[in-house]
Length: 220
Image: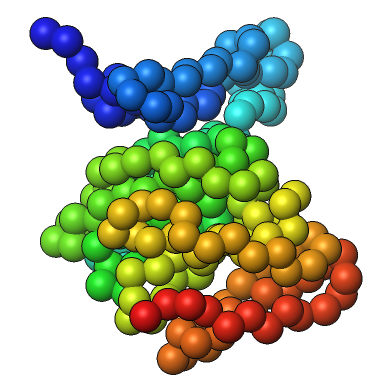
C-alpha cells in the first residue's frame, strides 16, 4: 500500500531520525545526524570485582515540563523527545519523538493537546493527549520562525502564543486550523511568555533588552 505523508512522518519519528518535518503535499524531510544513534564511552576493560564509569550520549537533557491529571511531560532537548512520566509509579512509561531540540511544553486548557517548542528545528510539534491514560499521539509538525523557545496557551480561546528568539517575534497560532495568524516584533531576544488570566495581554520577557514587552492579543 502507498503511505501518506503523515504516516511516513510518523514512521520516521518512531525509528529515531534526528529531525523530521512534514513538507507540502505528501513530502517529508527526514535528517539523520552523522555517527551512531547511541555512543558509549569509557574504559575498554574492567578488573574482576572492579567497577568503571561509562558515558552515554545523547542524554535526555530535560528542558521543559507540563503536567496533566494523568501524567507529567518533559521536553528533552538532548534526545529530541517528550517523555511521559506516570504519576502513580513515578517512572517514565514512554517517550515520543518530536522536533529538533524541544525546550518548552504547554497543554491546552482542556488537556487534550500538548505542544512542544522545537528550538533547533524551527517547528512546534502538536500532539493529541489521551485524557484517560496520558498517552500522546503525534498530529502535526508546524513550521514557525527561527528558534521557538517559549509557549503559552490562551485560557479560553483556540490560540497558542510562541516566542521565536532569533526572529525577535511573538506568533499567534489558530489551534483549530493550525496556522499562524499574527506575527508581532516584540524586541531583542525574547525568552519567555505568559498570558494574563483573561487572555487579553501577553507579557514577553526580552532577554537582550532586559525588559518585558506587554502585548495586547487579538484572540476572540
